[in-house]
Length: 105
Length: 293
Image 1: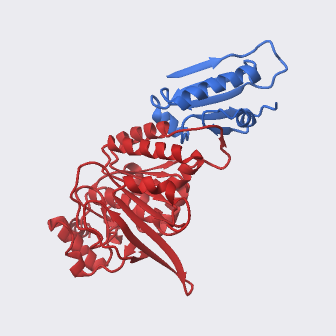
Image 2: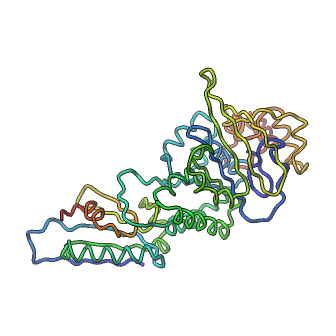
Image 3: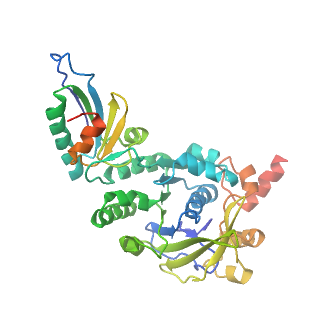
């Protein structure tokens, strides 16, 4: 399953470039379910729609995930803006996620 | 490395007397301190399986980067480059220090990736090198246990002949209690030790568990030659203790007598004539050598 979200807020010219992320999950895993929920909450609260998120189910696209360097799931890759960053886990520690995404509270 | 039909690497003479057992995956645990030779032993097992038995393998590297492991092995005449084409796959499973940890994770995704790769290359052997490095970040022994059993369950359904775990456990210090269950689920445990005596590094291995058969419990000194790790002390009388005396065993015995090593990895001759992926045996090599000259 690949879900794509493009919730760009066109009305806000002040915001920096959209944050581009890929979240690797295993659809049935409890950690993955929590990661999706946690990330959606963080995006809603801190990114105001200015992001692109691709969610990849490793069970369906294992070789793609392997090529992307995924080790454990869930795993979040921030591709841009640079520097790139990786967060592993169910994203329950919000401050770590914000730091990796370059969001200052 | 010498293997039986069941696919588990056989260890030095008298360490074990053959592999009678179920068709399920045989699991080995190699434990010891840093630099004690676990990784070489594990990789050598894959090299031998690929060369001598045409059985591809996957090496999951949790601690060192694959490039580092490959470069460390260039001193051995294994011709890894040829194997890397289709018989040996390294998965870089390092969680780099820059990775942010946020909450619990699991190995569902990793095992799905390994399944896909296993199908792709027909892998029958798998090494999890540095399993302690992966398990420690899980941060509690309950998660460690759960994920270790996840690997075990995956192995049970995977049609892999042999799995080898390596872990930095020295048996004296800690986290041995965390790995008690790991020792419990494996069929074979080998302790690796390296110590300096008068400025010389001495390596030894000792089998401490071998399910389903008798084994020699003494320590064996090991050294490193062009073919990889070599185990001393292979006396002809001991070699008689191999379980089966079929043709393969006899050949292995001969090889042992000649090379005085129980880990029959690629010899220089195999390296020179064996990189075409053909089945390797002493006889075939000699034939090829004649044909090629």
